Length: 312
Image: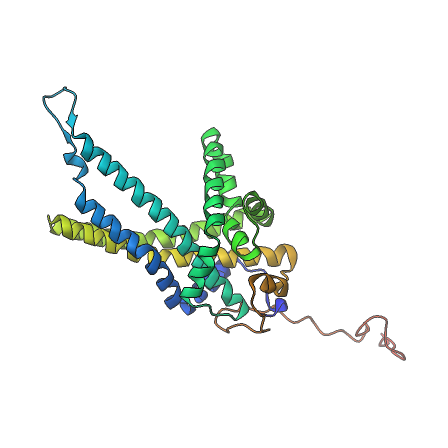
């Protein structure tokens, strides 16, 4: 993509460009998410079936008496829950990183397949986990102390992951870099985050509704576990790439506004060649051509030899 073809985008345009990239890379994005998160949700379903249900762990004796429980079952339930939570968190980082790689490639007329995107994400897994840890550790106290600072930081750090993956700026540096990019564009960034949250919430609501329908129609525990795994996998496969696409377009928009966006430098950092063109379905609209100089103004400065202004 020619740097001159990039221009600041409105909130609606950011969403529009993100959806176009999402559609053009749909196959690879879905595969990258399914390969990583699918096995985790299947394992979660198997663990759920192998561990006694939560409501059977505690056995009440008499009203008001202290409930009795089987210690081994409780520990098995807790261990399984913690294990699945950790695996899901790590898998989500890999899937998200792969989606950012695939979406970012659209700006360089590059089409990394889902395998290349996953390899890219795995190579930065440690940095992604560390960034997520810092995000939570710093954001939670700010939110508990006063909600306003927590909300501000959440938005200010919205593009920290694209910064890490596309600029290789890690840890606190990624958070500071994100805040510097968002500075002056905090409210538009809020609008973009709200829109993508609404879209993702609608998709998740559809699949949760389907899962609830299966649960209400069947008392079979196996059917419920399978339906839950399918619903979570499908919703994640659709929403994770969408969020990555929106945040990536937002990141590029912020760079265009603040820095003019040196595309060739960023391409070298990613190890790709900037081709000078981009797919027509993902290229933001080009800026309007400047008006032609009038007869009262020279075509350039200093004026060419012999040029004189038109007599008024």
